[in-house]
Amino acid sequence: MATNHLGKGTATDTTTGANIGIGEDKPKALDAKGAIGHAFTEKGAIGGTADKIGGPLAKDGMIGKQFTTEGSIGGTVQNAAGGTSAKSN
Image (cartoon, rainbow, N blue to C red; front, top):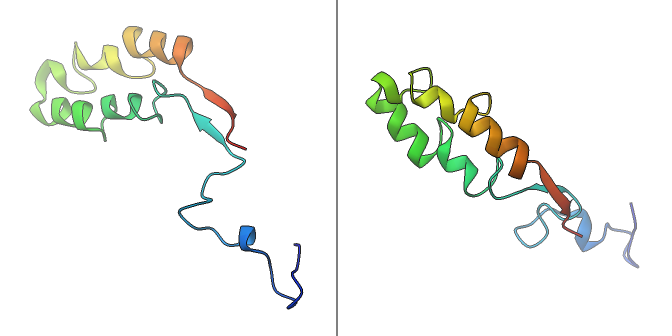
């Protein structure tokens, strides 16, 4: 840990809103953890609503299971456009 002239850690040693995630890999937008892809997971706005409706739209239903990261549609998107992008800094 770097120290300043007062013997205390530098500003970058403290996590704040301004420096959170710096130097970490960021998920791509369509990744299941990304800004868009997350909406389609069971905890996201779209996937969560479909899961609450249930039936064929539930995560284990005939339609819903196709949109999971293991399903034919969700899996294809995850493999083609998912993953992480370069480090943020």
